[in-house]
Length: 324
Image 1 (cartoon, helix red, strand yellow):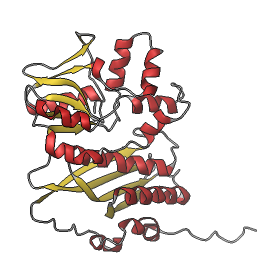
Image 2 (spheres, one colour):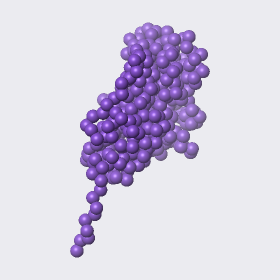
Image 3 (cartoon, helix red, strand yellow):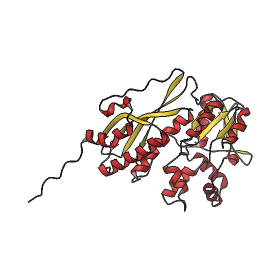
Image 4 (cartoon, helix red, strand yellow):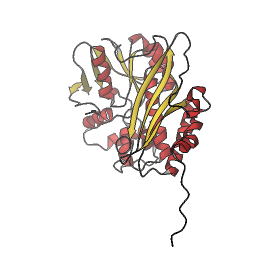
């Protein structure tokens, strides 16, 4: 004789109420997630809204089996990084989730807890979205909203020949961190893995970006590739000096073990997922850049782009992730 049927779990709407309504933090525009739409707040006169959208797929953008709260942190942070590069202040987001069979209610709850912690830390509210089931891998997609002074959003296309090329922090740690998670690189303290799992969006540099950047991007594809993106959008070239790229102690330690230092530096500058900022600025802004912890690593130029190592031009390949 079979026992009684197990009690049914919460349905889709009950899960939304439990997991995601708290993430609205009482924002009236979210309508308690009871509607099929949200109301975006009217911006103050003199402000523009900046919108960005990105998705994470399990097994592509993070390892299969990663902790749900870590996935939540990475999801919010990589999207907020796009707003940081625009000089924008984030305030809200929409999300769509595709739950796979290996994401039971316990993992969904842990994901929501992770989102709540991150959203509170960055001061943003969930306004709505959608949830579906899929036989494929877990996927989460978000549309994020920020604000900036009217006409003040920093684009990729503002660089001019003679401008300095600068980066906001160490390069290559996240690429090494992913390799560390795969057991390919030693990482005794876990600092490298943390850079991949919980990147820090450089929202702290918002005022610097607004005041001094003629063009900017966050480093997601790879430093070389993203610097070239700025150059291409601006109709000029860029010259990058690999000897000047800032490296963390962990990256420098890894570099000493590599037989080909040139190829190793190219790998660090092409690995991607750093989520530091790459900036084009006037030469007169160098003191402000250095004061904010940025490093000048090259210049924008007339003509073709190039990568230098030990004073000679080298072939750096694609320079980062290709979205083919």
